[in-house]
Length: 142
Image (cartoon, rainbow, N blue to C red; front, side, top):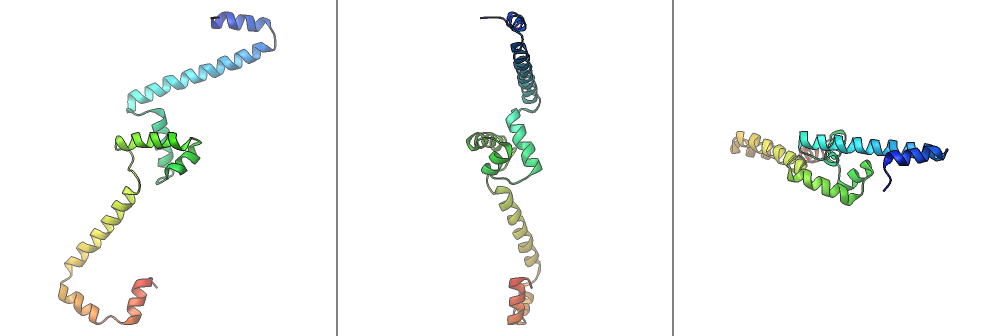
């Protein structure tokens, strides 16, 4: 195996190929820096760089599907699915429509509690005064 130093020295002697070697070495240095910073993120936060990337994307555009995340991160759907699965396991992301369902449940619970504060007799009297046009207005919101 040829060492980097001897490889670079022989490439310098060949002329135009030396530029290619310098570019490849620079790319290798960038990749090595990304690996080191990725390990640092993982040690500090307890999540991988891929998980951090997905979390950042979700922070910018919440409630994306796996397919949306794959498209927006230029990543294969199966890879995104695995990363999201790990985030769900760590309770950093909610699966499916859980957040939407929870919000709807909380809204329903609010109205249920509000209705319980009004005596049943009063609700009955309100219903007896309700006309057809009132029900149309209530149901359509117009």
